[in-house]
Image (cartoon, rainbow, N blue to C red; front, side):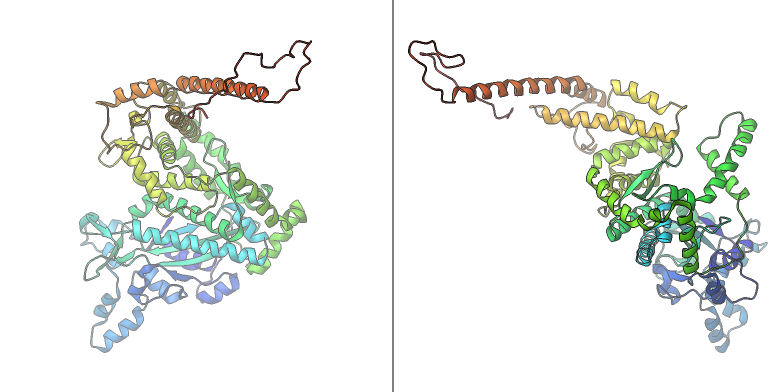
Length: 600
């Protein structure tokens, strides 16, 4: 996400973003430049379009974009002004009637307290970009595959924008934005599709720029126009990103039958989900910009460590990566080609690099890999285990966190577990609510943290195991988070197994994830519950129960074999000879082995 402001920001929007990151000469019409660049025209999206007389899917004209995205005015302001002037209104009154909310000139007025020192926001540019293997399949596949992937991109993007508008977007008013509420109609968005990356040599990069105007209406009877609260959108941008990826994966799997698998890009960091079966070498062929950034990053990292005296943390490393991207960013290409010509060039380049077999059988291998992935990965989402995994990862990564951090991690968890299968609506929110109810405690007025006594009650051995994992600074954060989540999941499995094997009814202690804090507890304290749970459901107890059951089963099998031998008819022996071995002696009675229902 990046902001759009008056001046250079709006000029970059009109001369670059709207024409496919090309170079639009001054005075050249927008539509002619888009046709020459080979990109489709922008379209309007969002539920708020009806408030300004637009419809979903309408083409974004140059004048509409100038008025709404560049000046914060009604997209049909010219007609409105003409009608008001014909009614006898002054030019100033007619112009003011077309402004949605506060004019941007207000921030430059000396009468406004400190506003003249700020540059107002006009919009927010959200970039929707699928994983690299999706770009590869879109660029090198046939026309049917390309159209299906573009449809998946449209659906995932629109669903994510709808979630932002309905659940996240807030309008602010009063001094300092003290009053906030959900927007009345929804967002107004202009979407522009691009096909290429900014690498020196053209490479496929299917992505959409969704420019969200900050002008929205209050949820009152008058429908007063105002500005979006940018910090609300910025706080939920990662949650929106994970939701978009989750939707895109589901659409691709449903329409093309492909599955997804994690790929580790940087050791110890979060993996990314990629289409299974696509040759990993093609990712290097497509992501040339990443290699340029990685080549420049060690120099910046060494300078940082020499200046600060320690290696960069996660935030500092991200800032250094952004700096490396800016330093290695090539100038825009002047050669503009249509999508048909670009796809032909990309295909020829990939064939020269890796052969025709890798390119031609791309979809076939993806379908075969999907069968293997779905055969070994069960699409089962255990809410209790998901809640433990989510809170462990977020706690190790952040310490203190908010709800939107949990929501983003819950959607990552669903992406990894389901591998493209559809998820039930609201399942991510259900996981987050379980975490908030059962495994968190307040850390400050606005933050919360993990409740360690809820994750492992009392002073148990698990604390001695988990605390070094969460504090092992030599390992990357995400690696420590995964180790901690795995240890907690193992404990949950051990507790559940002990409950299944036990013949007694067990109290619902807080250590069992299925329990809720809102239920009555059979103990006076968490520490007491932890001690009882440790005595009854320890790992040693589980192993002892397993060995006892195995011995009973072996004894049962021996009895069954003896009974089967006793019932086999034998030939009558000669009177002068002794009875053969293993036969029933005269005068004895055979008693069949009985089995108990519980063991059976």
